[in-house]
Figure (cartoon, rainbow, N blue to C red):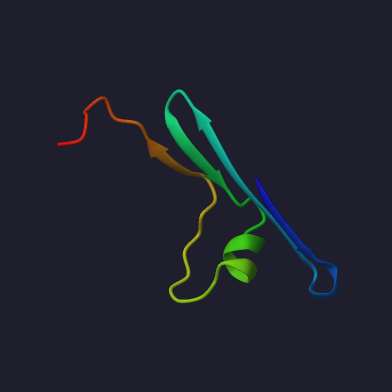
Length: 59
């Protein structure tokens, strides 16, 4: 988990990465990390993203 708070700008970033049996889950529930911390270049939402494990190996 990554947390960054900047109360003077009302920013409360909580970026969570969680592994489970299906893969990697990414959460940024209040979108503060996407909108205020990791915003250089193209903007993208990172809340409720799941990177699913595959059964195939690398070729």
